[in-house]
Image 1 (cartoon, rainbow, N blue to C red):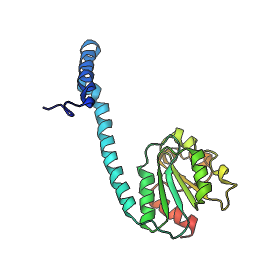
Image 2: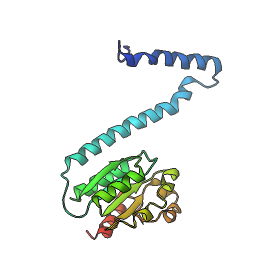
Image 3: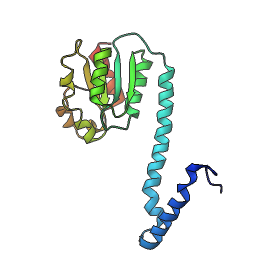
Length: 193
């Protein structure tokens, strides 16, 4: 086999790293190396796949014309949330229904988001959280929007709210539903589309 990036600075640490793993394994390990590396291999495989899917969704989102119809919708992930495929899928579906939607991505800083909301005055802000810590960071966000005129609707969803339904009561705003289809219906009802 050929070393990737041969004669390139990026290949410098690869041989030393593998040799180090092998030396550590030979000296200290009680499990086979393939067993020890299996979780890392699985995660790398999942991240490769999700990166590919995210790229495709983003390309489709950007290819859809941005409508000027209706109030603007912002979609993204709350602080410390890095799994944005669900929010991106929601943004894509809304844009395909000719809604004026912006996808803001992952790990949004709430202070920066409030400043952007103040500047553009969206009708709806949709944030997702897939884990408990990310969901907890959304507590109180809706109250910080009370002084905006017109006041945007704050919608939230994600796996954290599906797995632990009590989180839905701790975050004020509108729970958008357990599925993308449910979120689309709820958004339609909220905005009277």
